[in-house]
Image (cartoon, rainbow, N blue to C red; front, top):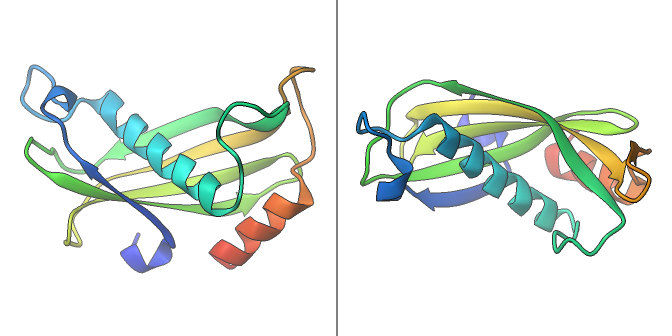
Length: 139
């Protein structure tokens, strides 16, 4: 995984409260970092993330590989990209790096399904978002 594979980035300062009793960033914090990158990705493709819609993405799977311990103070740069598009779902990949380095500290994957929130079931990914993802990530 290389930095140049990502077109969407956020910068995340590691907070003191992100650390656990062992003095490194708690594993749950990495999922929050990925979530923030995912939301930024959605904003870039024009997907409103204000909770007012009757349909939208729902994460159904998330994994994270912890490559290196991180301690406060630190700043991470988190890249996000879509790597796979299905009819009703898409896969996002994340790379978490120490700021201004090639040091990959974690990477992850999440799968989101396009949901009708009212009906509680999946539905086809709208063409406008599919097209935006394809263009942004050269799929």
